[in-house]
Amino acid sequence: MAQLNNVTPLFRDLAKVEHDHNIACQECSLYRLCLPLGLHSNDLAQLDKIIKRSQGFNRGQSLFSTETPFNSIFVVRSGSFKTTVQASDGREQVTGFYFPGEFIGMDAIYQQSYQSSAKALESSSVCELPYEKLQEFGATIPQLQVQMLSRLSKELSGDKSLMFLLGKKTAEEKLATFLLSLSRRFQDRGFSAREFQLSMSRGDIANHLGLAVETVSRLFTRFQDEGLIATEHKAVSLLDTDKLQQLCG
Amino acid sequence: MAQLNNVTPLFRDLAKVEHDHNIACQECSLYRLCLPLGLHSNDLAQLDKIIKRSQGFNRGQSLFSTETPFNSIFVVRSGSFKTTVQASDGREQVTGFYFPGEFIGMDAIYQQSYQSSAKALESSSVCELPYEKLQEFGATIPQLQVQMLSRLSKELSGDKSLMFLLGKKTAEEKLATFLLSLSRRFQDRGFSAREFQLSMSRGDIANHLGLAVETVSRLFTRFQDEGLIATEHKAVSLLDTDKLQQLCG
DNA sequence: ACCGATCATTGATCCAGGTCAATGCGGCCT
DNA sequence: AGGCCGCATTGACCTGGATCAATGATCGGT
Image 1 (cartoon, rainbow over the protein chains, first blue to last red):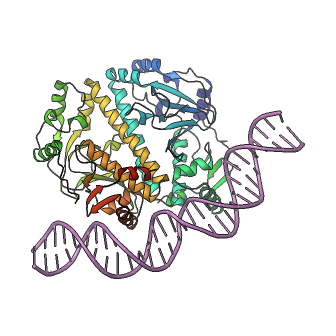
Image 2 (cartoon, each protein chain N blue to C red; image 1 turned 30 degrees about the vertical axis):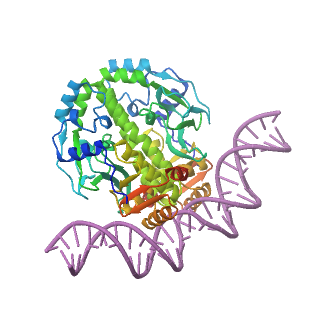
Image 3 (cartoon, rainbow over the protein chains, first blue to last red; image 1 turned 45 degrees about the vertical axis):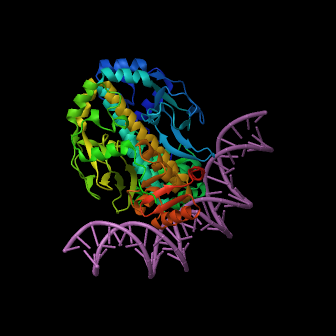
């Protein structure tokens, strides 16, 4: 069950991206999800020059932490990451999961230092956007600035929804919301909305949703018993999205 | 007790702002907290022209809701506002409180429609920044764009902290954190960090912190019994900020 | 100065989800 | 192929904070 077996063309493209570290923005399959959207091709070529395409990160490897000096924001090219904020007593909150085309580190701009940590959840790679150069560039390419504002704003509205989730939703609603949010994001990237692999652990999910691992585990079991989903380890199939939608509140 | 009795010069300035709707950015006492920071004075004069200075809002009056067509973002000039996100079933989450110099509505940029509602908590006024004109302007004044990004980023990192608060902190830690956050913001605006008036209800506070009103009320009582704070209705004095700081976790 | 509506406080009880404890399961390393 | 070690599941129990229920205080309107 639940393999990523209905592989779309875009999926193959993404696989290609993963193995070709020097693919240019113009040829990148993430184009329509990514920053360059709407840039003229000569501007794009310029942007392309300042982007550093990193080598891969392994599962668990840190992209940055609050100790890392701030120089860049990042766009996920392949794989996935989680970000966390940490208190001095060691407690931490998973503030987000990030998939290809999504931006990481934008909350560092204001203080010019990373306010959170980012870790790879699987073998992953990123495009690095040196912030200073991005700024210089923005001065001559207004459309780039507009894109940046739009990105920041998108994350902002996502965070507001998350605040609602954390403050007002029940455990059941939280997990249903989470699963559908993943589904939508996979779909946007050309993957199946019905079947996907979770790159994060149950612990990460629980933490992100403000729940205990045990609660998440029990909910997975219950959703499965009720025929809403099917799971096998990290693979998930959504069997009744309408019902899940209802459960979101 | 707990009156705003050690009134600073800035407080008087703010009072003046409140009653003079046509004061220019150059003369505005919020200058150092606000958008124009770092703009050249001729740029500033230009920015000044596109800003609409609104007439006042009364307590409870709506600045915008999700039904309002998106045209502008706003900066609080005087008073205070709350923003909320709402689910279809009527539940709502207070996503933030906003004081003079703070921006409201930035989460609308991405979708070009307001994702939340904003209501005045007391007699208040705002500066309205028509987004389209702001964008045109940004094309010629890079520093303005930089400021905008910085603002967005500031809100973003605040939201991440709030996610930690909602997901991981106990009721006690939540309220202590909230009170100190208010204190810092009042201080930034030239008010006393020790004594201030809450413009929001216990219900708004509870909602914002993901608690029940009754819990907040009990905590206020307990903090008072323990000598951490003194309250009289909406007036609060912080008596032991060190202890409060410890309670934040 | 009174009245009704809204907001705040306090007490009693309840329950969703956390915590504790044990067992199961897989993948990875040698 | 065996043995860890970290992750996941399941059950039993507990508790922080929600909910329910009253009463009191405040404020805006007439």
